[in-house]
Image 1 (tube, rainbow, N blue to C red):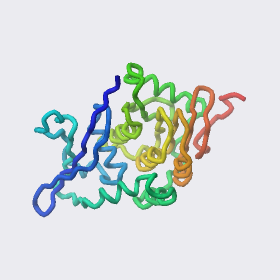
Image 2 (image 1 turned 90 degrees about the vertical axis):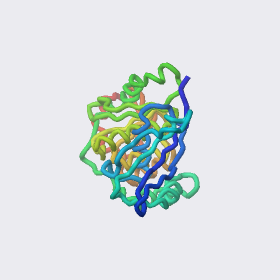
Image 3 (image 1 turned 90 degrees about the horizontal axis):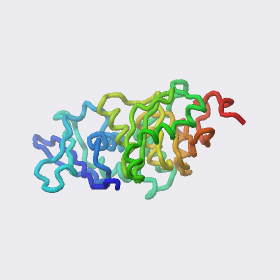
Length: 261
């Protein structure tokens, strides 16, 4: 069976000469790549901007049986942190408590710009084969049948990072967190491939990470399509060998004739 356990993410920051701790979120996740998950989550929710703000990430000791289910992100001493960001960010990033227009505007407020054209493209036949390449890297799913996956692929269809989790958003955060911790963001010349459907939150995370193309095995939501169109992101759904549905950003898909009639 796929393992599912809680992970509490805390932030430690210096305020008026003393260290303070705030709990940011508790998410149900599959253990593994927890530091990347925390980093990706904090970045895509606009709480952190760069790796240079982070002094260290560590599991919290002395938490009894929850030792590896609580981690702390300690900021550098010169980083000013506003705890009010937590309340504002989680309200603004929700696509269910506010109308769709307000949700999209919230992504604009954080400073995200439309993704540039001309930096990334891939042939249609390569695009249609990405879900199978993602599946080949899903060792946990092949054992349990109970995990989502997200993968980062280059324009030749080569996988660079594949992460699994019981939560599809967590899998995406683990991928983005890898780039955050390695100083590789934005991912302007990569495609994000996800194993399930595409929601507003997944597109939001892709836009934040500068990813110009999202490919999904399942369907997108209407708000995901609206957000992708607003930020010039190529959004593909129902991808499979021999075909796919293209919703936005057709200029990044090349050589359609190779798919046949």
